[in-house]
Image (tube, rainbow over all chains, first blue to last red; front, side):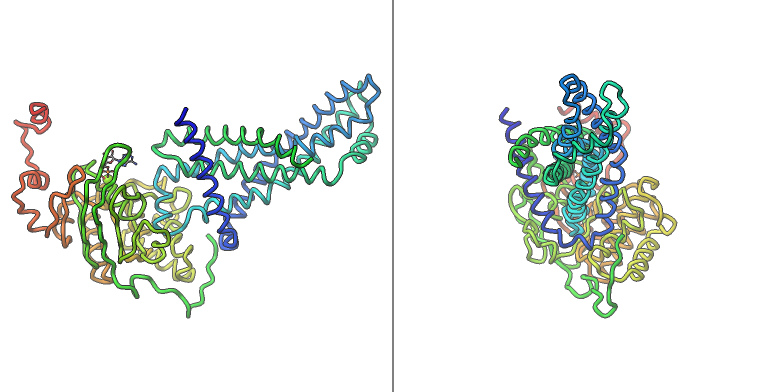
Amino acid sequence: MKKQVTEILDDVGSAAVLVFRSMAYTPKVFGNWNRFIEQCHLIGYTTLPIVAILSFFIGSVLALQTGYALVNLGGETFIGAIVGLSMARELAPVMVAILLAGRVGSAITAELASMKVYNEIDALVTMNIPPERMLVMPRLLAALAMMPVLTIIGNVIGWIGGAVVCQYVTFIGVSTEVYFQSLKSVVTFKDVMDGVIKAEIFGFLVILIACNTGLRTKGGPREIGSSVTRAVVVSLITILVLDYFITRALM
Amino acid sequence: METTQTDPDTETTRPADNEAAVGVEVEGLRKSFGDTEVLHDINLSIKPGEIFVIMGPSGSGKSVLLKTIAGLETPTKGRVTIAGHDIAERGSREKVHMALVFQAGALFNSMTVFDNLALYPTEHRLHGRKEIEKKVMDALGILSLEDARDKMPSELSGGMKKRVAIARALVMEPQLMLYDEPTSELDPIMGATISEVIADLRQEVGLTSIVVSHDRDLSLTIADRVAILMDGNLLAVDTPDKVRNSDNPVINDFLNPVIDVNNPRFKQKKAAS
Ligand SMILES: Nc1ncnc2c1ncn2[C@@H]1O[C@H](COP(=O)(O)OP(=O)(O)O)[C@@H](O)[C@H]1O
Ligand SMILES: [Mg+2]
């Protein structure tokens, strides 16, 4: 128990140090422009298809559930509002963050852990090329750049998913116009922005946890796997616990 | 790789050209992992421009010593200074330029051989792109690696990786070179080439080299001094001739093991324990 507590404190402490060291290199982003763009591509472009598919289905199922619950009460005009708000404030940012942890975070941890285990990180250090500058900073900035894009795309596709269900599921039968009218009357720019802020915080933390766990890997190849598992689990816990507090703070 | 805009007039020259060779002082160095002490009170003074070879059985702590000198492991006690700079201090890497050839190469697996070599001069904006390409190809040429320039490390044999790692260190043009078993896994000719490269670097640019090696030819021909490390203790630090003619039986047996089929070592150990 004592060992676990010190381990967690070690993780938090080293993550804090890593943030400061790597973000101090932010002005060097132009010297690392290709790496930054490469990471944007990795985070943004390769995550986009799965974000699109999942948000479509989440929007759809949300419309289906609320439709099922509200139609008999005569509340079908609220479906758009409920789907719109839930997607923007909650589901799009959380879903994008979870996908990021599984799709990108795990890959980053595996890559950095392997670099650590095979002395590549040590080689960078002896070359006086700080890994924080070359490996961590471009990834953190890329996450900050891509999370809003992914979240907003997730929102829009989720909303469309809801609209499709409302229109074509016979027992709901709400037209697209009514659905979007309801959505527009409730969802404000601030709601979307709150979601984007959430996504920024989650995305930054997911990539930070991934980098930190990877760079702290010790031992041999077997430890690469356990680092990946650890990074993903810690990311998911962080996202879900923090979600409550950020949501509360943004209200 | 990003482009470097280097004005030919302001082009940075290689550190070794305009800075004197560096000496290395190891004072009262101890290194423990957990409860086991791996290095016991090591004291060494390596002169600028010297070729210093560290020999010893595997597991005796040679790699740990080399990594500690490079500042990759922090000493549990004692300290390492290079040209007067404590290597444990942040910022000392700005002042002393060193290159370490790792035992397993430590090539960047996501980069081609060319990019592995070009990374250091590119990141530090040492030369223009043309100049970097030339230096990289020169280094590859010395180690007969021209054909490997566009290969990925995973496509190379163990010995080739080792040579690429050495080439990568050459391109860095450091003041201090650390080699961890540079000639293991190499054929005798290539091993001899490496020895010649190390000796040549001292002659051309007065480079200080610390070489961990079991290669008796390398140690006894090019070394200025040889240290014997056993179980984390320095048994001898002396010129190759003196070490070779040492009257310490342990050192003698290590340098000139006699293969005795009738009385094998592993059976002697069993009898003793
Ligand atoms: N990171 C580490 N953690 C724990 N023990 C280590 C570590 N690195 C090396 N050792 C131990 O230190 C001793 C010396 O290792 P090393 O310097 O690699 O030997 P060699 O002389 O063969 O290069 C070995 O007993 C090894 O098990
Ligand atoms: Mg070793």
